[in-house]
Image 1 (cartoon, rainbow, N blue to C red):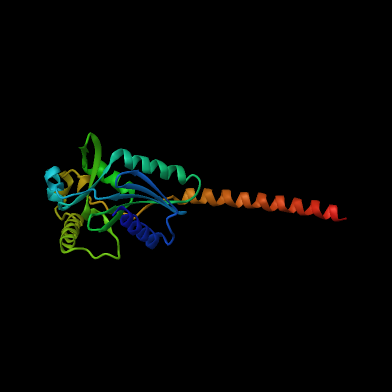
Image 2: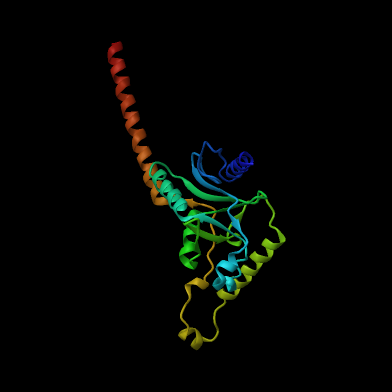
Length: 230
């Protein structure tokens, strides 16, 4: 089962990033780090629940749906630390992949998980460890898999709520006295966390300088060889 899971995850990542997984590291049962040349991925298997509204009943009016994934806070922080370290050496993208027991695949940026947690406070505990919960409706389903009817309803409801919240309040007096509630602004999930353009620019400038030094060294070696020939 686990081998099938890893094969599916590798297929998904190859489809998204157009390159193969080079290395796989097991973190714990059901959790893996997968490495490619231009990406790193945190793979989670089976960490789904159908009790999101029960656990976070104050968020029920947000229409996130009842299904959610969860991830240990320390595991997410460890993954983000790896991303920060690797991107100092080369441009890289980071994504989190959740696979259900039915092999449904969902992806999202690790920074979105943290942002959702900070915005809505969806933190709990399992076996004494802090875990973050994120509704499945806020994840990006692999484009080669169709949404279920339930997922379509949940996402359509969220779209309707977002459309309502985006409408300008025609009553200027009411809007003047109302305090803005940031939590009402629905977050938009992204597929992966990318290296910034500034970081990429610094990387390429560094590589260009290294190439210039290599070329300079080769020219010196050619001069020495020519002198010897004479």
